[in-house]
Length: 71
Image (cartoon, rainbow, N blue to C red; front, side):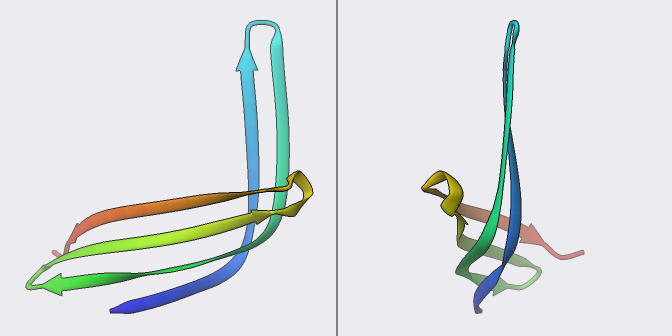
């Protein structure tokens, strides 16, 4: 199976240290896609998602590989 995704995200980042705390948040579009391979009750899924954060001038890119077993 091959899939694509698109949507909206809200991201909140918090940095903490002794006597210091800073929180930032951003929201914008998110998009990506991936593929999964099924055999029997098992499957492996590979996916890639980009979270656009234009107010901060950077993107967060996430790649994932997962294994699933159907019960």
